[in-house]
Amino acid sequence: MNTSTNDPAGKQRPVRTVIEATSAALWQELRNACDDALAQGHAFVAILHGAEAWADARWLTDEDRQRAARFRQDSDRHNFMLGRNLVHYLVRPRGITTPCTFSLGPHGKPFLLDAPAYNLSHSGRWVACVVSRTEPVGIDVETFARLSDYRELLGVIAHPAERRSIEQAPMEHRLALFKRCWTRKEAILKATGKGLVDDLQAIDVCLEQDEPVFDRPASLRLMQLSMPQEEATIALALSPSVSGVVVMRVDASR
Image 1 (spheres, helix red, strand yellow):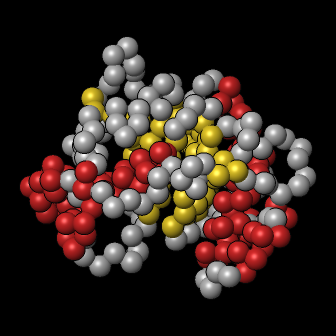
Image 2: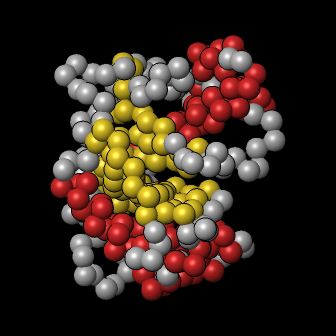
């Protein structure tokens, strides 16, 4: 059971700033924008598309290299490396030249000691990272490339209120609502560090609200991040106290 409001008392919706970046100076541009955002009390989101060529194995530990070698698909290997690269360049202090050593939360969520909170997600050729000085924070990006029939999943993941919202919507809007439902739930679970759980039906992510704010399972605001292409759906969960969100999009596939 969870509750939400459009805006908590005394809180305004966070300001969103979207920056279109080039890939010529990818990591420098991302780090500068991230530092500026955090200095203003904002969260920072980096969204990479088609950036496989920027995957750099230098920041992998020996254990990471072994893990990367086990991926059968090149795309999964690249996404794993890009995730490590984003953490290295955005979350760690500048100038560090050794790979990351991660700590794990009680539910296995990785974090860096004495560093901002962060979360990663990837799907297809998309990789996203959110960084915030205020916890909790979670992000989910999905292309749903392997989704056959979303209706088969409604009974597994949807709260009764969510199911009604989807089934009563015009036919042309139902798939988009399902994608919103899925990514919002993933973002919440990643923010709380619990990952996938068996009681997804107990969570109502308030599909009819643009930016719902929740008291449980944690104090969270949900946001959808729109993309120029419709192939990816991205949801963000962050503390309601965060005053703004800066999004930098990098399409290296062009």
